[in-house]
Image 1 (cartoon, rainbow, N blue to C red):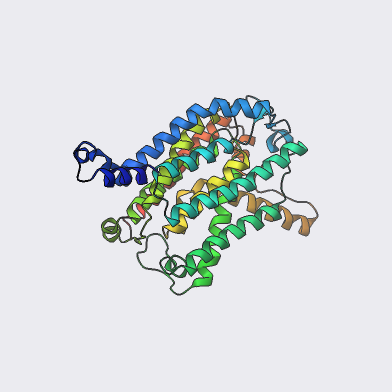
Image 2: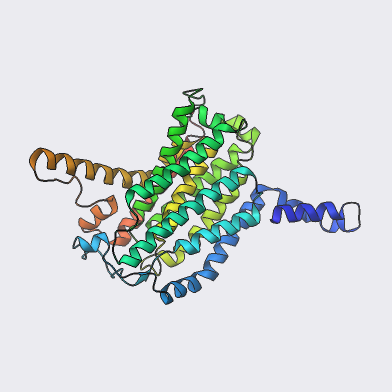
Amino acid sequence: MMYYASQWIADWVEGTVWAERLSFLRLFRYITVRSGGAALTALVLSWWLGPRVIAWLKRIRFGQDYQDRAEAAGDLRARVLSKRGTPTMGGLLLVPVLTLSTLLWAAWIPPVCLTLLCVLVLCGLGFYDDFAKINQQSSRGASERLKLAVQTLVGLFVGLYLWWTPATSRLVTEIMVPFYKYPVLTGAGMVGLLLIVLVLVGSSNAVNLTDGLDGLAIGCTVIAAFVFLVFTYLAGNARAAAYLQIPYVPGAGELTVFCAAMIGAGLGFLWYNCHPAQVFMGDTGSLALGGGLGVVAVLIHQPFVLVIAGGVFVLEAVSVLVQRAWFRYTRLRTGTGQRVFLMAPLHHHFEKKGWYESQVVTRFYILGVLFAVLALATLKIR
């Protein structure tokens, strides 16, 4: 909106005495300026709306009054305060702030609109899941099949849209991997479509699984978003992309504004979500943020970079898959299911080992930064 408004005013006053006085409006053409504006807007809005949204969630009793998985497992030693009564659905703060800040500062081109559409759809899915949990006062919300079905449809929609649009079809038909400057596969439309679905489903669920400790998921999301802030800016700049030998994607620079808004909204939300949390993001926020990161990775032709930048999310998701697979396998073989971890996702395993919640979160942040550095290293090591 700011981009279009500034251009309209500049065109309107062109050739008049006001043209020189309003020459500063040219700043809004620069992605860096608008990205800074989006981050600052999202941060201030989150700070301002945070107490109001939290009070509203408390008033309508959208809180966690049921046992979470750690409490149900008897793991209370590692928790300083009980989670019960803390408002959830903090995504109702996160996602609107992210969306509004992006619309305010970014150009409304197809990649931006596609990203926001996916974020809003997954936010709606998460809201349904959270509402079901609150309504039933149980940790069981929407069925896994329903969530996977909606996420898969979102992935198929994104993949087919990109594939059938001539300007973006190569984002699907060419498969890029980190540390290598050429596509490893070309003309691989079905493989690319499957990869896009896996990226969106995987990233959305991985962030959701990470959302189990105060500040953990949102902090790691901010770190990953910073990586894609750099990647989107470079991918949208023809000279920088050619120099670094990464895929140039016209319009990708506008996704920098989206990533900046995610960082600002994430930091503002972390203000209220850090230990002891005043609000949880819930599936309303985690599914949407994970999906947003996945879509951005696909749109800049770097889906595998997300696996590196979101290394913490990958570890969390893999721990759940390994735990479930091993438990079922050993139950079939021996009649008694066995576990690889004391508890999954991985952050609960370390809680079981006696780590304090703040220790787990801080150490996972450190891992997140290391993964982010490794992801950024792929820009030069090719």
